[in-house]
Length: 253
Image (cartoon, rainbow, N blue to C red):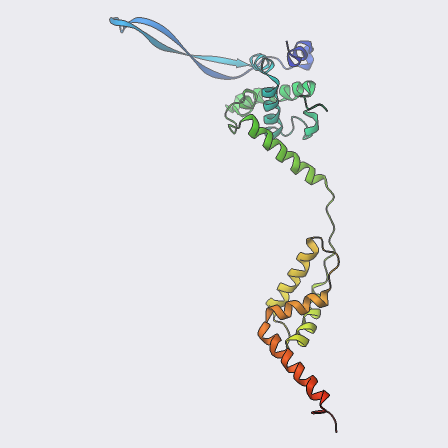
């Protein structure tokens, strides 16, 4: 007798649900016959006999108790993934510190799903019974169930982390900085779509975790990349103006 079977045997009647019918299954046996419709056959043949058998809660308990721990873990995974309320959404209740299955918690989860399976009989819904029997609910192997379980744990842990508050820079201020840089680099103001793209870029940098952003430098770089030909022409014009100033051309007399 394993730990699960011992725990089940030690339960008081008030701690365990009764043994209601949870569903049915068709079992096939074979009978050997030498006749067909009253006529003799040349040799005996095996004829299938189909029988509908009731599946009770006790049948399920006994079947689960007879499983190896790895298969019991697979059922625990199924329960956690398929019946969120069974473990209260707390994956840490499934295992002990040494990685073994926490049998008392597993037993309580199984009993909870047994109750749900009993309620579902009225709706001809085998979903919960399939989970307890490792039926067709997803048809996942124990390894696939373990992977799905780990993915779900990762989602839960990610949800526990405090979300970072981002104080996004004022779009109007960013647009002003871009227009100032554009006037210097291109000799014109930026278009509406260009300004929107720049604001999205700066906000994206903030969202990625970059805390120190030189808006002026980013604005100048953005303007140059947005219109490199215009930027080049403006550079030549500015350079020519400096030469003329140095030569005393164009200044005040």
